[in-house]
Length: 70
Image (cartoon, rainbow, N blue to C red; front, side):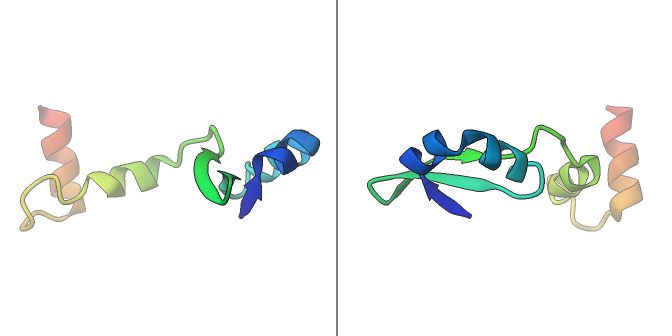
């Protein structure tokens, strides 16, 4: 969802609550300047983002063990 800075100022509480479920992109003069997002980190998404940082012939469990052992 994209909203303007002035819309955020007028309805900050509403957008803070919405940010728990989805990202809110803040714009100024039709240019994206910020993103309001949840503070809760999905650990599986973070771990999956790391896949590829290690050799491609390893599966998820092998990459996990490699990261833990270092």
